[in-house]
Image 1 (tube, rainbow over the protein chains, first blue to last red):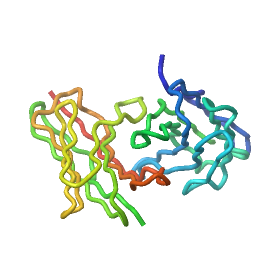
Image 2 (cartoon, rainbow over the protein chains, first blue to last red):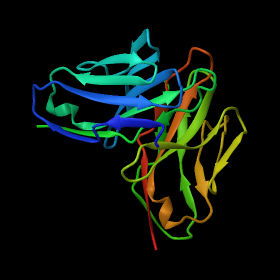
Image 3 (tube, each protein chain N blue to C red):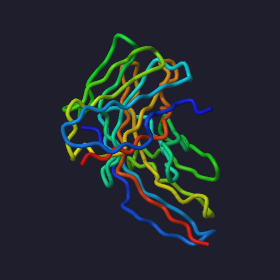
Image 4 (tube, rainbow over the protein chains, first blue to last red):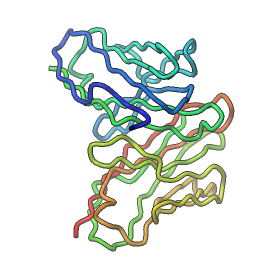
Length: 113
Length: 114
């Protein structure tokens, strides 16, 4: 089984709808991250969490919110989706002690119409 | 701010050709440097890394050397295979206990044809 899983893998929604993307990990890592990937722009950090009680904004957090329900679960919400949030979203984890390497989930492809 | 610049793609090579993907960085401190690879339909995977100047990272036939004097971390492979077709991302992370963020380049798409 994959260490970092994301659900759903693909989602189509309409402008104004609320949508939640979920991430679960079995690596036992305390740090979790949400990125979005846009063609030609690389990956940009949306939110990150160092533990259940520590959540921080990344460089592009506007329009997004997150919830760290447990050490293993980190959800990303779009309260009112808009078309320019159409992107590929990745969850990642890292260990505090060996924080050099981040481990990525398979991604969620989101289309906002 | 910190940034990573990598050569624009797409890059198309024939099987067994030599590969170089250039990566240069700007950082205020002494970063660790990474190459991540994204195969079609998958998430990013760490390919190799180097944590200090003159270190060489290597994996699966790929190599990159941390060059502080030229602020570069170019990815090379002597003989590419069709299975190497993917998007390659150069990234940096500042060192230190408080550092957490990976800064990525825009990615370089590699296509290897038989």
